[in-house]
Image 1 (cartoon, helix red, strand yellow):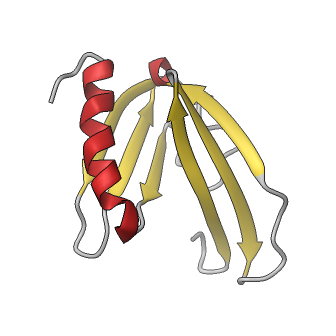
Image 2 (tube, rainbow, N blue to C red):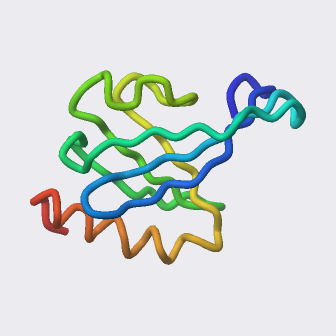
Length: 107
């Protein structure tokens, strides 16, 4: 959510070293945009972090370049914070450590 009026919902998928973000925006819960798609590679990231919040976890993606997340609403320069639904927290808890190993960072 941005400024309390713009809502962003979407899906992040990962296959073969490539992330795909599919997202849709709506203004005040109405007037939904077309579904948009943005791709980037694992090698475009400098870090990936899983933060366990009180209510639901967040995955924080940090890019090696300012252009990696360019055009994705809600991205803050080289950082993209994704709120993970409760139903997907186990998947996030498994995926993030595996991605860190693939990035060469280990656990």
